[in-house]
Every structure is written in C-alpha cells, then in structure tokens.
Image 1 (cartoon, rainbow, N blue to C red):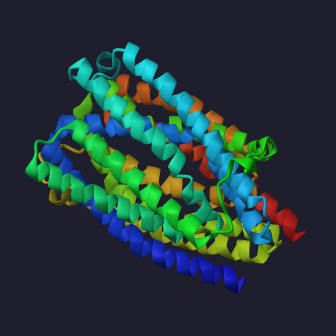
Image 2 (cartoon, rainbow, N blue to C red):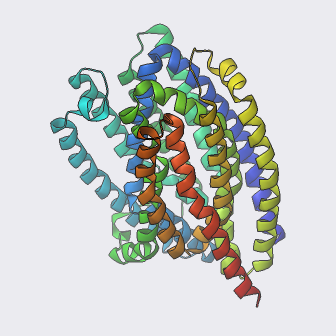
Image 3 (cartoon, rainbow, N blue to C red):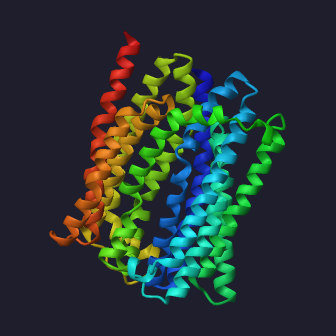
Length: 432
C-alpha cells in the first residue's frame, strides 16, 4: 500500500507541475489564435481540429487494452512485452493507412463547405483538411508511446511530453504570426509538426532507457491481437459513444449556429477545463495502480482511495460554483474580445464538469480492472440520446449553444448513477 501511495504522490506532484505549465501555454495560445485568425476562423479551426481528433478513437480500443496488458506484463517481467509492442504498432499503422485512404477520397469528393457550414473557398478547405489528415494519421501511430509510460506507472512522463508539445506550439504560433501572415493552414502545420516531433523524441527516450524492449517484425503475433481485442472491442465501442457524447459539440454548434458560436462555446469550455485537467492529473496514474492493486487483491487500498476521491469531489463543487459566478469577468480579462457568453452556458458547463468528474472517479477503477460491460450499455444509451437532445434544445427551446452542453449533461448523468453502484457492488463482494 505504501508503495502505491508513494507512486501516486510522485506522479501527481510531477503531473501537477507539468500540467500547470502546459495549461498556461494553452491558455496563452487561445487569445493569440483569436487575435491572429479572428473569431470566425478560430471557430473553424477548433471544429476541424476536433473532427480529426476522432481518429484516435479508430484504434479499436487497442491503446486501452495495451495499457492493461502491458501493466501486468511489466509486473511479471514477461518477454511477451515486445510482442504486445510490435503487434500494437503494426495494427495501428494498418488502421491509419486505411483511414487515410478512405478520408482522402471523402475529402476529395464531398463539398465540405456546404456540409460543415464553412464560408471559405472549397479548395482551401480541402487543403486544410488534407494537411491536418496527414499529421493526425502519423500521430495516431506514434502516440502509442504514452501507453508504455502509463503501463510503467510513469504517467508524469506523458504529461511532460504534453507540456513540451503545448510550449512548442505556442512558440511557433507566436513566431509565425508575428513575422508572417497568419492562416488556418499555417496553424494546422504548426500543431501537426509539433506533435509529431514530440512523439518521436519521447518514443526514442522510452526505447533508449528500456533497451530490453524492442520493435521487431518477428515479434508480431496475431494471437496478441486476439488477446487485446477481448477487452479492446468493448473499449472501442465505449470510445465511439464518448465521441458522440463529448466530441461532437463543436460540430453541432457550427452546423446549427455558425462558427462564431463555436468560439464562445469553446472559450467557456476552456474556462472550466482546468477542473477536468486536475481530475486527469489524479486519475491518469490511478488506472495502472488500480490494475496492480486488483491483481494483488489489495482491496483495502482501493476503498481508501475511493473515499479520498469523494472527499475531494465535495471541494470541487464549491470551486466550480465560484467559477460559474465569476466566469464573465474571468473571460473578459483572459480573452479581451467583445464576445457574448450566455449565463446559461456557464451554468451548464459547470454542471457538466461536476457530473463528468463524479463519473470518472468510478470509471477509472472499472477501466483499470477491465469491468466495462455495464459501462458499455450506459455509453450506448447516452450516445443515442445526446445528438437528438442537442437538436431539440437548440431548435425547439431556443437555448443556443447552451442547449448543446445541457444535452451532454443529461446524457452523462447516466454514468454518474450507474458507475458508483457497480463499483460498490464489486467491492462489497470482495469484502465478503
């Protein structure tokens, strides 16, 4: 127990430091981008970037399955680690190539301007999408290094890499926008090239420090795909559902309300994102620790950790309420642009954060031990109602972009009810 607490404290301390600087870089880049691109173009960029973020969910759940398998394999010091690593790289490369080819055809044939309500020339939109597609396909493969460090219970290293990535993006945005003409294509190249470079550097660091682990074609095993798929398929379906619930908001806003509304929506989200970041700081190292504790039948430690997280959650509610109240003033100082923020938008964003983090307390544990069947059912149910609710709130209740986040709040509330019940049931049985 002391060892786990020591690992957790060490990871949280480092993650907090790295994340704090990383968030600072992100928050500084937002007003820089809005000033350089304008409110409408910034809304377009956020939408395009979020659309291609969906590619990470095309791993068929392999990354999450790999994280669990590698955590156990590292503990046992099994030589099958190399087989998991090689098989995952080759599998992800295959998926990325197929996705790239299909997406290239779609970009070529579909009128993206009409589909996404983007008021730009079609050739420019296609160029922007194609450049972004190339970088995301490469990153899709290279970003697997994160699962290596997660499995080694060194999640702080992942956060260090993200800190360098966000810092490099901010630096390049400033240099390019200060000394040359700003554009959406330049923005896409900066984000893509920065991410690829960081992935390469930290992949090299892993294999340099762990030279007993290597990538080799001879280590590719179809059997490992089957092993990973047993849990990965469930994770994949959950990821698709989470995509529908959480990642379609910007797309719905731009289609239903236009790019200007995307900017106000995204800025409001970033205001509350700090709470989600703190939650990630705590839960990221816990995934592998839960896997380890459950594997070693250390249920006493698991229960104590759950209690601590619920106590912290009470304090979270108070800080979120304060942010809702002070939100307009904070946004005015931070963004320094004449943008209207509906009070309902800030209220519903706050509720979203509260409900989401409460659910994550229990979801992290369930993911760590691979108990995802109930979560799978809940995810499918939430995904089914999310988009229809968003359209109803915008079209028939005239709630604007605040209606879209309200629909998300209602959808994820199912998690906040079902997941705690399942966790308490599992731990009660283990206690008996």
